[in-house]
Length: 64
Image (cartoon, rainbow, N blue to C red; front, top):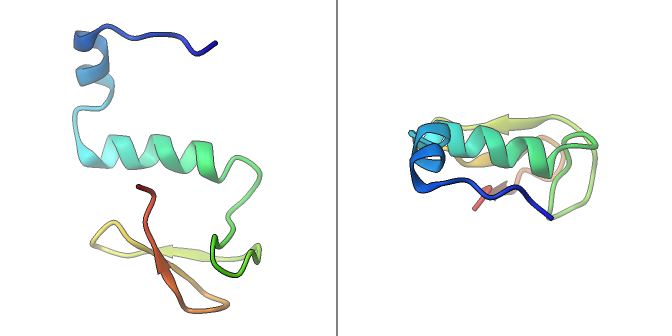
């Protein structure tokens, strides 16, 4: 079971969108970066608008 955080602890841990994205990256890419569209393991580029682009198929995706 996942550890529950208090509201204060949650807002401190995820104070910015960047902090949330980094946490989601750790969960999604725990076994390495992959594209959810083509499934290829490879280089995933993070764009400035917090979207991601696969270097193999060129499609964009988001963590959320």
